[in-house]
Length: 583
Image 1 (cartoon, rainbow, N blue to C red):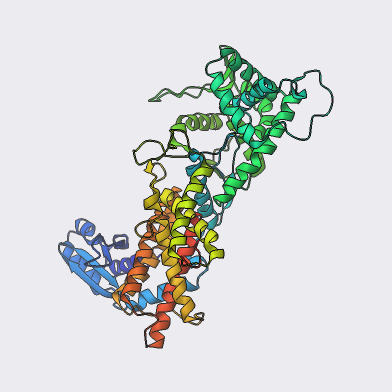
Image 2: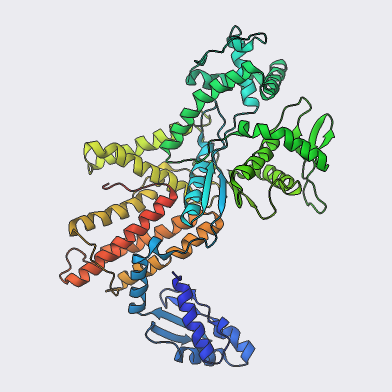
């Protein structure tokens, strides 16, 4: 379905052509003065230079040739602006077509792409903390938007399960329980099926070992050695590693489920490990991998660089592989498994240098095909009201699970106080409102920007918040439920200015979605639904809907708000949350 702005531009362009002028001057934009007009064309000003005529004369000639059935107003304003308002019939026809078209007539990707989105990145055996929130929320929404446009999209959690934290945990565990068979190099029996620790115990081992490694050089060296031996295949360490994975991953999955975040691929750095030896040999053969102080590096600096570009470190002098190595090996794996047209990485924007390095290496060594797009979307930090990174009251990094629990408790108190929903619906209603508050509060900000986490503001039922959007949807549901069966209702010509404003807001869905898709920017979709919700509420307050005595007019109102509800529900689905029945 053609976007409304394109249709209007086509009509104005035809009028330019009928006036003997180049039709390219007929591009129309949304008016920046909605008090004067809905759309405007400034082409006469540019055409005046080319045709050596006053712009006002050109604009009048164009307006004379416009189809008056399409516009309720077409006037020329000096020095040559063309101000336009759509006719009610034209707008009604367009919105009704939207209502009946699949996905509201939004055009899909003509050539569907295979896209891998790397947006998890949790480290196994370490609790998810609030630093994982933005990656999960933004990545899930971007994935849903990409899928909406018809692409095959694979969300990859990309677990951090192969690095130094594993060496620290194993070394720390050995200090506590040296008698375990995993540490006996001569052990040849079967290792225990049950892990020698609980999740709670495991989560204490890592921070203690990490802290000790910073003050105990011998222990730090031991952890590095353990990491190397794990990666080299030492059986006891591999058995412990499997225990760590089996204990940790279910908990990681549970928290992502609580956030309604779902990954198609649950692979980690360890899954890329088998690809490393061949990849490294290939890089050596091509002359990209070179030795430096006992390590193997991949120089990626290029002539003309305006900043220092360090090399990728492939293998340390002690034989251990690093983040750069597994990142490149993961690309090899993704190329083999998915043959992607695009790979999008979401991570803290402070990792931009790392991704620039590995992108360069992947291009230089032809690990990724030239036509494959690689993109890094770096996001800002979530800060407290003091403008500093969000912390717990005692100054620590807050667990993601704690943040979710806090906002559930905060919203649940409001739900119980309002006493709108039945007791058996309180928990589910609370969950939906809390997720809307949390996700919209994050997604409404530009991804690359830092933002202030303010629970009071995010959970408010008024203003630019997730609960406000949900409240708008619930209000429409209530009206529709009272009206009854509305399947036979159709959109009619706008009965008042508020109906027309609502219809015009609906027509801006496709441009908003396309821009959010193009820029991987859910905040654009948030801005759109806030505008649409505002138009819905203005229409509701200024129009008697259920009290309207003219049945045909009433049915038109019902069809209009039902369409608004469907659009809002589709948009919040793409943002990663949903509306309750009551609130």
